[in-house]
Image 1: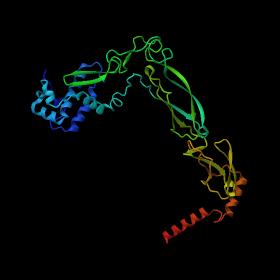
Image 2: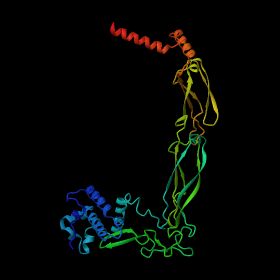
Image 3: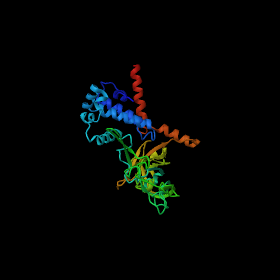
Image 4: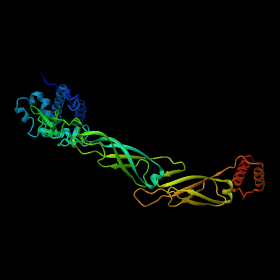
Length: 379
């Protein structure tokens, strides 16, 4: 059967540049890679054809020979050396795959351990804590359903008294090579799935996986000062690896519950406190609770206006992993009296009659300026 034109295989024109060739090869190779189509002979054949075309066209000398003589330039044994195919061709193809498929295959090729001991997956656990717990820190107990090493086979996957055996297909390498003329391709062994070992007599408890599902109780230390979104890593507390492989990690993601009275901004705490009109006018004192369980006294000077803030130094949240404390801010809101009795109304009306510019300087000044503004407009 006649070979297809290399340019047709890659889907490019004869004037295609180096980057065009590489992009076309990357796109098509991802689509028909044997690891995506295990056991598909057509996909394997197409992938070999694709690599053969790219190997020739990416090399300026080989491409020139192909453009002049076609496939005949590489036929007949001697043509391979004449076209520049040296003994390092197989290793160079491996480098090409590493470059093009490192990201596609989830990292550099060969990331699977030769021992076949696959690392377990990382796990995530969402935890909600109260603001006072974030202030003081705490030790919490959590229950996590996860995979753990099988106790029956100690994680090996083999029935007690037996051992995994070296894969007969790949000889324990975890990879196999297929050659056709000058072309060589290396891929994961389909028999052992790259582990290099096979289990002839699997454990009855885990069916050869070396791990089983179980709910575990773990202790988590939450340090003082954690913020919303803080992540705590528990090394080795994730999913157990296959057949004795190392366990993954467990990541605790924290969220802080909204508080009824306090709002947090970094290490600072804010609290709105309503006060009566009389307290605002005459002054007084407030006893305000703090996150440490105590309370602090705030002095309200006479003539305090709504929105005034009072800073309590060192009464805020601790900064994570330090001895620094933020501040607490008390913002007063002057409450307007409602449901007045007749006597209260009389007293306020009397107060209004006695008021002057000094009693209410802001309102008096505002209306005076407004009057001057409109008189100037109409004058």
